[in-house]
Length: 154
Image (tube, rainbow, N blue to C red; front, side, top):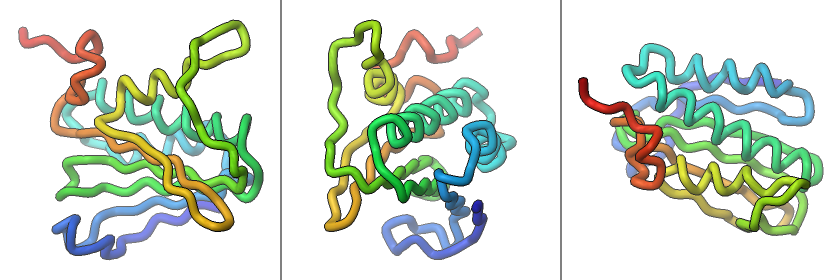
């Protein structure tokens, strides 16, 4: 189930009606989630930033499916007057995400999130955890971690 709405996210956002997308990850296909991120950021001037946002969302959702438990949900919210995209992924597993040394079984997903997102973290609640990441939409490579992905001036 996918829901697109326009709600007030809070005074801190300073945006009267930021767009929000919510979806049930147990019924939403990965392809559809990628399309939702692209649609939310449509018309954005930096294609690399959009690709980075799709990759971060995909990695967080993949981790929820691989390591988490149902129910799983995702929220995409424009914050800070649409200068940042916040991606939140919920799952019911108490296991915490962690950066690890990549090997043949994986370990690259959170490294990508760490490099592409401006900031990321985990919020623990009584019945679930939310792994979240924010990406600056002002310019590509703005996290300072992935300068090699930044567009160079011509």
